Amino acid sequence: MADKNTGNTVAQNKKAYHDYFVLETYEAGIELVGTEVKSLRQGKCNLKDSWCNIDGGEIFVNGMHISPYEHGNIFNRDPLRPRKLLMHKKEITRLFGTLKQEGLTLIPLSVYFKKGRAKVQLGLCKGKKLYDKRETAAKKEAQRNIERGIKERLR
Image (cartoon, rainbow, N blue to C red; front, side, top):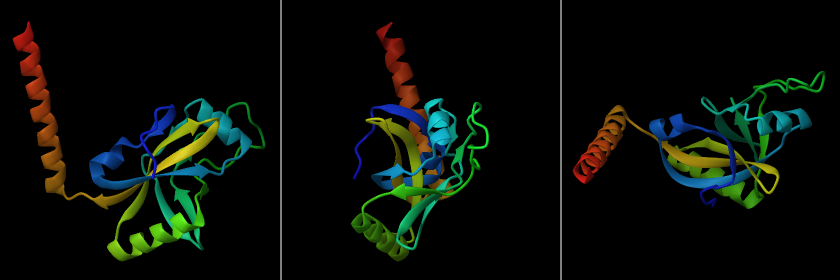
């Protein structure tokens, strides 16, 4: 399981935290070509509508948009192509069993660099209902009001 990344975060999927309960997180490497790495280093990545699936014992991320590198020519790839994620076989089979059994989803939460390598933080997620989303928004609003009140009292 992956801990919170503190390094060079390229992109985050904030919508995932709004739409899903994140139960567990995992760290995976990502298989990229040269121009995609250059584009990632410039911060041109979007995870908004991305998801992961397991096919033939391998994990792929779909819908992750990495913009083409502007100085690349014929070497640029399709920005929305499925990209292979790199994890241990044991982890993949355990995830596959969990996904099939409990009806959970695997969502990329963030992309970052760790020791010069591109990594993806995956979240094992369960979908939120509308009332869950409202409850979360109400908690955030209450917390904001508390902090605002404390700030005014300290003046």
